Length: 483
Image (cartoon, rainbow, N blue to C red):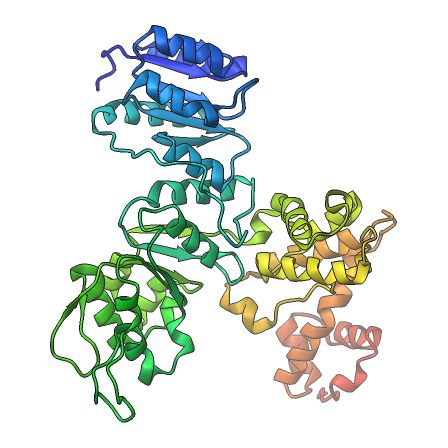
């Protein structure tokens, strides 16, 4: 649709600045813009005028946007809907998309981004094939939900909502403990396959000799002990969804068979010659970089392309620390802890947010559960929480953490512990914490030769001697200086 084609756009938001911004921007593009500050007012205008695009806020005075969405949909027919929210969660995103919304904008957003979305929706308005589902069945049976209001999690919710109803394979990436299994389950729960089987398996937990049998089944007599034919996971999950966790560790031979399942919808059981059809949606999860696996020839490039038709990357908890208060309250409410909302003071919450939580949401949940046992119903104290576990040097290396990141982490930990504001020696603390380790490693490298160590360090031998005395580390090396 060209810029000169005039369309009627209805913007429903109780923030005058948002309405004004859309009105000015879209009017300049040749469109007619109507505004409303409530769902009720918006419905009146949607009924009175033919609407080509609806831009609808979730939180409105009176009836909220999500509950009013079905009536808006009835009033505007097949016109696209863009939902806006500053307080979204996964259920809001899914309810919006399933309620007939075409796109999902998270506040704050740039007007140029909103303009691009609106133009794309107008261009595709005749091709809108969104299906309307009942938004009441959105809670998982076990109560396990993805929790977060940060911008990073809003993007995750949006991608889940948009991809759920498709048949595309999905690759979920993220560090251990970020909730990849919850994302996979949410995709299945909000998909057309929701009433069919959902099977999650980590093939790496099986021995290589039985992985193919578990996934694809085996024929009678296929190997020693195979007294009867046995169905595999893909046959048992026919019509449903399969989550393959830790996909990066799948053997190459099995990767070939998995590629055939995704591309052709068929497989061959171990010891059998005939192909079998299966209708299974594949979701894969990994904490590894599969592109590196392709470069190392441990993962097939064609399989990576097929698996990552849609990719969802989960942020580590240290990159969405604003969600920690919400997560803590959520865990405490699930535990039935008395006064969950006030159980953690603001000061203690700041200390929890200062931690890096390398075990991510899983580590936070375990820490909250531990603290709830220690506190036994009272307001929490810092001593109720387990000591922050620092990641081992090897684990840090696998995540590619830089020295800058480690220094930032250490500094934040020190500052969070200085609750009385009396710290005046942070620099000395850093030197005292790091210099002894540096000297020790260099002296080990030079086999105790201080002259060689001083040369490596770029310092005078007398300075090195003074440093060693400062740390009472004369035993670290024998002076082998030569005249």
